[in-house]
Length: 171
Length: 291
Image (cartoon, chains in turn red, brown):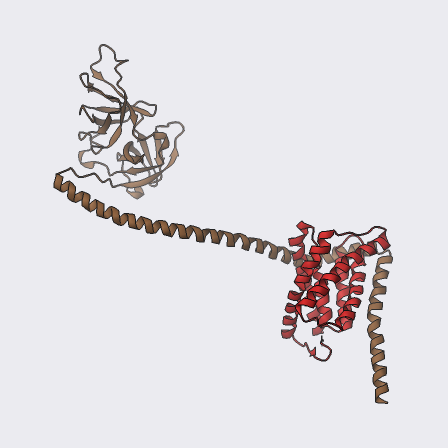
C-alpha cells in the first residue's frame, strides 16, 4: 500500500510540475512533456507492469484536460513505453547523455504519433507546432535528468522502498 | 528438470509482461472508440475540482519565481545605489573636513581684519504643507507649537543659495503653523536700502511683490538695489534680504507725494517656496502690530 502511495505522490508532484511548465511555456506555444518525462523516469525505476500503469495514467490525465482526442495520450504513452522498454535493455539509462537523447527522440515521436492518432480517429492531424516538436522535446530532454535525480532521491528516503539491484527495479 | 522449470517460469513471466502493454493499448483504443463524451465531461469537472490545489500550487510557484526575479533585480539596483551613495558620503566627509578648516581659517582672517561676524540662522525647518486657495499669500507648514513654533516668528528661506525673507507666523496650531507671506498687503517690515541707507516700510503689494513706503524723495534709487530688514524692526532680525528694487516708482508718482514708493521684487518667490526656516520670535522687542 505504501508503495502505491509513493507512486501516487510522485504522480501528484508530476501534475504540479506539468501545470508549472504550462504557466511558464504556454505563452510561447511550447508544450514541454513533463508528464512524459516523469513516465519515462518511473518506467526506468519501476517494474514493467507498474511502469506501463504509470504511463497510461499519466496519458489519461493529459486526456482528461485536453479537448481533442480522449484516450490519445494514454495510447501514445503506452506505445512509447513499449519502445522504451525495448531500448532500456540495451542502454544504460542512468547516464545523462542517453537520458537526454532517448527523451528527445521519444518525445518527438510522441508529438507526431499523437498527431497521427488524431488523423486516424478524428480525421484531422493534431499538430502542436514546430516549437513543441523541437524546442519542447529539447526541454523535455533537459528536464528528464533532473526528474530522474529527484525521483531517485525521493525513493532513497521514501518508506518501504526496496531497490532490486539485479534488474534495477524498485518496488 | 530444474532448468526446464526455470525456462517455463521465464516464458510465463515474459508472456505476463507482454499482457500489460496489450491490456493498456486495448483499453486506450476502447476509450478512444467508445462514445464516452458525457461521462468524460462529468469526470473532467470532478477532476478539475480535485486538481485545483495543484493548479494553484503551480501558479503560486510561478508567481513566486516572478517575484524573486523582481526582488533580485531591485536588490542589485539597491546594491549599485549603495556603492554610489557610499562614494558620495566619503566625498562629503572629505568636503566637510575641508570646510571646517576653511571656516576656522575664515574666522581667524575675519578677526585679523576686524570684519563683522557672518550671521548664522538657527531655527526650525518646516515644509510647506498646504496653500490656501482663497488666500494665496498665506501658506501652512508642517511644524507647529509642538515643535516650538511661536506666533510672530520671522520666517526665511533659501533661494538660489541666498537667504531671503518669507514672512511671519500669524497662526500657530499644535502640528501646523500659518505664515503670512511678505507679498501680502497686510505684511509690513522695517527696511533699509543697501546703497543709500534710506529706511522705509516694506509692505506686500498683493501680487507676489513688495513696495517700500516712506522713502525720502531725495533718495537716489538704483534698479537692482538690495533691500534688507532694518535693525529698527520689532519682529525681524536686521540684515535679512527682502528683495531688490524693480522700479523706482517715480513715473507714477503724484506731484503732491511726500515719499518715494519703489516696487521691490521679493528675494524669495512665494510660489516656489517648499521649505522654510522659522526663526525664534524677537520677544524682547515685540510690540503689538509690530513690523
